[in-house]
Length: 128
Image (cartoon, rainbow, N blue to C red):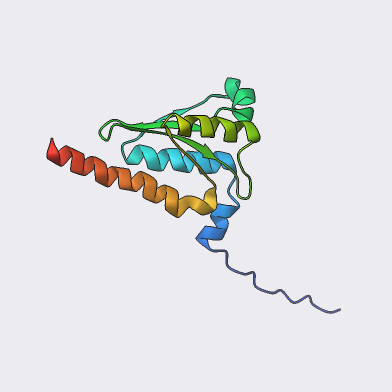
């Protein structure tokens, strides 16, 4: 009777792991990180799920010290906003509203957006 050889598995990097992250976990991580950096976050509840899936974006965030607001749409890796979400994001952008969309592999850029606001808020406080 032969024995099956067992190959050691390849190690998965943090970036690869984030790419496999479900959207709900990605959203929870973004909310936690944003709140730690002074953002107030509005998440839209399950009863709005049907509207959210088609039009409404995932998060509306404000930074009271910085006097800044941003809409965020979060997607699973490889997914993109729906056509109606694209239309809504374009309407917001034309109205001068900051709107962004991210997926887990975009974490470094998203982290920079939220952390940068923390540094900017600190400098605003210093000037008051």
